[in-house]
Length: 150
Image 1 (cartoon, rainbow, N blue to C red):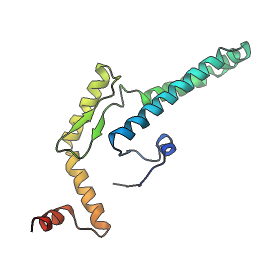
Image 2: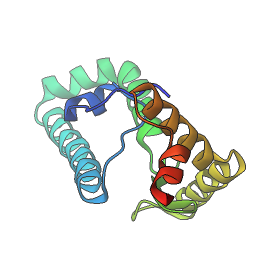
Image 3: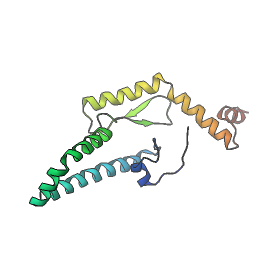
């Protein structure tokens, strides 16, 4: 586990980390803000390209390049393929699916849960967190539990 600590909002979009851990409220705001910004940007670009003949010609010239970029962006952020937020801190596998997901997106969220259970991700996270805590001078989780029981 390569813990990076706090990440600024722009770092999420830049790919500074692979996983962001947050509580539900701020996580939902972050996702909704990113989705809304993407839609707003797309609407703005579309309006500008339809604004004048010169813009339409520019779009026609740039289209072969833009088509690939747009296709890549849609694939990277499509809720059908990247669906399923993991709830940590519960005893069990809990996956939250995107509210706008269709059957394919929901199936992807189920796959995320299945892979978590199959790979025993909870135990691996627990072990990594205990190891990280021990590296910081703290006692591993098992020792803290036994100390608390005494």
